[in-house]
Amino acid sequence: MGADFLRKLLGPRAAPSPAVAEARAELDRLCRQRPTLSAPAALLHELLPDLVPEERPPPAPPLTAEHARTKRAGGVPLLRGESVSLDTGILRRRWLRVCAALARHGEPERARRLAAAVRRGSLGLDELVRAVLAGRPDEVYAWADALSLDPGLTATVLRLTLLPQLAAVHAVLAPLVQGLPWGRGSCPTCGSWPLLAEYRGLEQLRILRCGLCAAEWEVPRLLCPFCGNRDHRQLGYFSAEGEEGRYRAATCDACRGYVKAVATLGPLDVPGLLVADLATLHLDLAAADRGFSV
Ligand SMILES: [Zn+2]
Ligand SMILES: [Zn+2]
Image (tube, rainbow, N blue to C red; front, side):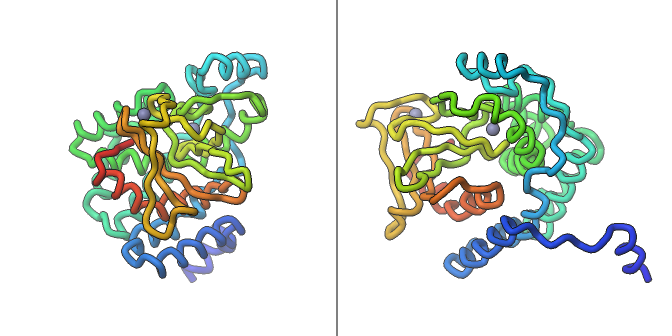
């Protein structure tokens, strides 16, 4: 009887979208190849339907096309200095769902602490969003530290929590600057550093992708996104044996930064982006071993 009542209240559970179904199939393949990824893959498998761009985007900042073009030409991310009205109720619920899933998939204590910090209001999502969009992500780490939370996990949960709303905002704003060059290493919409790069299509264009708003922007092959270095003598790459054509990491000896890259046929959708990030986790570990960091 309880289940009937819930079904009437909530309606039948919607089938996952084709993008989510495809990403889940890729996760299954990944787990068969690398059983060590089974815990993070199970977490992502569960979360994926909640992480796609929202169908009803929050109101985008009222940017005119002219203002957007001026920002692009001046190297200013579109959302910098704008008031972005994200729905904090939705963010809070998603934060708690991500924490609950994390707790089920191997991080019970750290996830519960993250959930409790938002529930009791000691970690304010509004402030975190403002800091990230103002280009001060270090504040997220500082707040986490001050509350004895895991800073890396806090940043990851925040990114997953924001992604569906910010990806929807990005999709609304992107046409304003369609085709205009950017050329920088940070995201032209939200200002974050790239999550990874795609080497896309037959031309192997190098397209950086944002993990916070899913934006994409083309950059030269010889460019460190973090320090702007273009000196081929200081830029290199490495890959795991047998994966050279599929996954690699581009490194910079000047700033010791690195960015992962995956070969793609076309643009990765949001679920595909998250799966690609997980599929290249071994490159993050190898980069850290070699003294590179993001
Ligand atoms: Zn972004
Ligand atoms: Zn660099």
